[in-house]
Length: 338
Image (cartoon, rainbow, N blue to C red; front, side, top):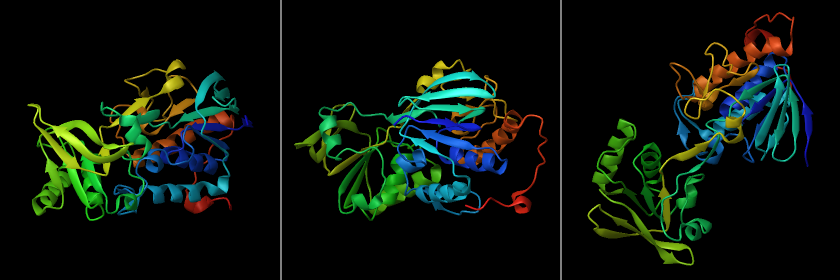
C-alpha cells in the first residue's frame, strides 16, 4: 500500500551509514525516514555477508556484520524512524526545504532535505557465462553470497575468484565444508597480503585445494543439482572438480538507477560532495557512504559514520532556519528514551 510521509530528512539507503544518519539527525531534533530497495535494513552487511567479521569498527576488535547492524538498530530505536523497505526511489522534485520523493510503489515522501546513503546504488553479482546457470542458481547449487556458514557444512565447495571475497570465504569455510577448491586464473591473488598468505598456508597443509591457473568452463549435474565443476586452462586443458556448491566471487555490478537521472553531478557512478558538509551539486541533497566521493575519500564504514554526522549538522539550518545550533556532546545531552 502506497504511503505519504512528511518528515525532515529522507534517507535513501538503510546500510550502516544510513542507519547512523538516523541517530545523528535524531540527536539534532530532526525526524527522519529510511527508504531502501532491499526488504531489510543493513545494506550489503545484511544481504551479502552478515556472518563475516569486520575488524575496523572502533571499540570492536571484531564484529560480525549482522551484529553491527543489530547494534545500529538498537541505537536508533529511540527515534522511531519510519521504514519504507522493498521500495526503490524513482523521482525527486522540489528544492531545499521542500522536496518530494516518489517510489516505485507510489509512495510520496515530503522532506526538507535528503541524504543519499545508497552505497553505489542497486547491486548484483557479476555472473559467470556458463550454460544452464539459471537452473543451478534456482537450486542454490550456485550462490553468490554467504549468509550462513552452517549452510555449507559437510558440502563440497568450489570457489572461483581472486579477490578478498574469494580468499576470505575460502578461509572462513575451511573446517566447515567437506572440501574447498579455489579456482583462479593466475597464481597471484588480489586479496589483502595477510589473507593471501593464510590461503597459501592452508593450501600447503592440504586444507584447501588451489586450482591454478584455471578458469570456469562448465557445470555438471542433473535437474539443476550440481555434481561437478569443469575448469580449464587457457590452453584448453580441462579438469573436473567434484562439487555440491559453486561460489563465484567476481565482484558486484553497481547501478545508481533513477538517481543518475536527477541532474546530480556524477563522477564514475559516484556523487561528488563538498567534504565539510557532504552536500552534492543540488542544494539540500547530501550524500554519504560509498556513493559519495571527494579528494581523500576512503570507502570505510567508519568514514560513512563521520559523514553522517557532518551531513546532519549541515542540514540543521534547512530544517530549523533561524535557530542556532548549540553543539553538545552526547555525554551531556543524553539520548531520548525509547
